[in-house]
Length: 405
Image: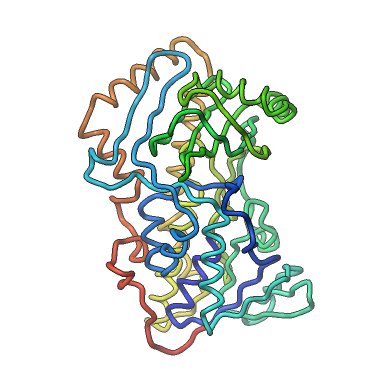
């Protein structure tokens, strides 16, 4: 998603690009089934996708607004509720299946004449010995460019070939994900219950279903995946305190490990990292892909400015501006989510008391709570042009000028 967004942004600014992709998104999936992987997209991410001209297509497939959020602690009486109406917004964000975002961006890419889609193909080697960095692909094709961007995920091969180390650790948790049909209507409210073993989130999907993300210990995750449908529904009802009544149906279940990862630096001569190739975050606040979209928006702006000033696109001096803008902001969010995880995923009595008190005090502090919501939505702070509201996407139209590869 993040790499495709960057490619769309740069192609729309008259850059000449090549995008290497293992496989094209599947366009034939059933609209009646909810994708296992979903993302909670912030307003800033929505603006990016609107300005790229793909949000309308996504809405035709399925985007699910959530207008409220309720969070409570299983080990006490602490809770907090957020409402879009309290800050004068129509919603707090959207729950969007990853396949929807991927397909809409892919369709956009295919319509742009100055981007070469090398698909199916994969990276074999990175050559930094010449005047310009080059990729050698599994097909044998060699590609030279001013700038090579790694958007190939948490286990980025390009990051490794560029010699960029990363730090991180396992949270000793796995996230169990599935789509479920609850007895009661979700009312377009996202719900999250913090338990000592990890948070359980119910994310509302248009049509009445919910996507669940249940972070728990590895042994418990294996146990949940091994249950039959009825037994899993009963476990989910108990874990959620029947917040939406009984669970009537559950779809396919899977799980993935939760880790924190952060590249020690984001750039090298001719190479930049974005998205999960640069950082991995705990999913408890759903910020992962939103950080990636902001990476893409900032890098697009940096590269566009470098071209206007006739500076090399892949020089370290050029790319350091991107790194300075994003690495600190991402580190702040990674640290905050790590702190939240450690505070809420335990049953230490004094800490339980403090966090429940904190939830209730924050819930009662109207102005502070509204400030938190606006910040989380990407409505405040320094934002790249692509992440700001422009009627009809007018702030990011194709700009004439010489093509840059």
